[in-house]
Length: 576
Image (cartoon, helix red, strand yellow):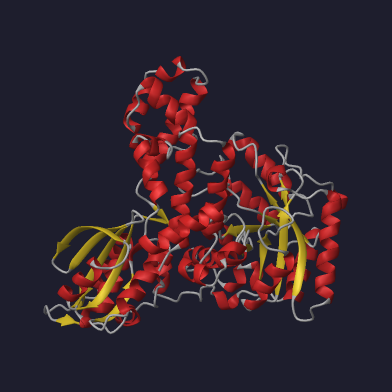
C-alpha cells in the first residue's frame, strides 16, 4: 500500500532541503503545501492515481503528480535522493532542534563548523554563537532549550503515527495461515501519547513468523532474532518487536507485553498475597503447577479483580479500584456530537455542509463549528461581518435538515490580558465559545494563569481550548498553575477541552483525572481542519478512557436538548 503520509514527510523534507539550498520561496511553499495536502489523506495513493482523483487535491500539481507516480511504482523519489546527497547530513539533525530553522542551521555549519548537535551545545555553552550576526544571548538560550527538548523526546513517536501503523502490521500478520492470533501490545495498546516502539504479540510458530516479519513491506533493517522475539526497524524509523508465543500462552503474553511495568508489579503483589506467582505464561500456584488463562478477563477474575482496560494499566490506583469495581469507561458509542471544527471560512479545507455531512455519516446528532477569531490573521480569522455571514449559512443549512443540527461557535483568542478578541455583544451571538491561547506563550506562570482564569470568568465562554498549549514532541506547554485553572473551571462552570488532535492531546490525561475529581465537565474535541480529521476523536477518547472518564464526564455524550440547556445555564452564570 502506497502510504500518503510517508510520502508527505518526504515532500516536507524536500521543502527543507530546498530552503537549505536557498531556492525561491514559491518552490519551497509548493512542496510544503503538497506535503500538507497528502498528510491529511488517509487513502491509498495508488487508488487515487488509478481513479484520477489526484488532480482534485488542492496543492497537487503536475510536478507533485510525477513524484507521486514514481513513489507508487518504485517506492522512491529520485529528486529527494539527489537533494539529500547535496546537503550535509548534520543539517538534518540541526533542523530537528525546535526553534532552529534551515537558514540558521546552515549558517552555523558554514561559519562555526558545527557538525553535530553535541558540537552546537558546546558552542552555545562557550558563547561562540554571539560572534555571528543575528545571534545573541536569547538565541543561545533558545537553542539550548531546544536541544534539551530534543534529548528528552528523541526516539519517540506520536500515538497518532504509531497506532495506525501497528494496526496495519497486526492485520498483515493475521492474513497468514501460520498466524493464529496477532494483537498490538505495549504502550500503544495503553494509548500513551507518545511511544518508543511497536509491540505485537503473535500466536504461531516462531520460525514461520520470523520469515513473514522480515519480508514484510516497510521493513528497513533486521535488528535481532533472539528466541521467539524478532526486532526490526521500519522505514518510518520506528522499531517493531514481534513476540511469538504458544497459543495457550497468548492471553498471558498479551497482558505481560501490554504492561506497564508498574501495573504488573502491583498485580504481581496481589497474586503473591493469594499464593500465586504471575509470569509471561500465566499463573503458577503454590505447588509450582502452571494454571493457564483463557483471556485477560480470566486472569483478573482469578485474582478477584474486575477487568482493567489497557488504558488504565499505569500502576496508579487501578488495581485497588478493581478490587471493588471499575466504572464503565466512555466509548465512541456514547458520543452524540463534536465541537471544535474548522472550515474554509478560516483555515479548514472543507465547507460547513461537508463537515456536517461527515459528522452525520459518523452517526452524530450535532456538530459545533468553531472557526478562528479575528486576531488569528495567520489562520484567516473571522471579522464580525464574516461571523454573521457564516451564521446565516448555518441557519440555512439547519432549515434544510430535520435530524441534524449545526451549532454556530467560534474559537476566540484569549488576549494577553485575559479578554477575548470580540466584544461581549458579538460573543452573545454564538451558540457557544471556545476560548484558546494562540499567542504570547512566554508569560510568567502567574500571568498566564490570571489570563486564562479571567477568560473563563466571561459568561460567554463555554469551554477552554487546548489548555496548556503543548505540541507533542515539538513544544512543551506554557507555564501554568493547572490546579488553579481547574478550580476556576469548577467555579465558573467552564468546560475543559480534551483536544483530540494527535499533535496535542491536551488536556493531559493526568490532569483530566484531577478535573473529574473537581467536578469539571470535559469535552473531547477533534480540532478538525479537514474532513478525515473528525476521526481524531478516537485519540481524544483514548485519553479520556486513560483518565478513567465515563460518558457522564463528557459534554458531548449529552443529547442535543440537554446540551443546549447546559450551555444556556453557563451563560446565566450557573454551574452545570
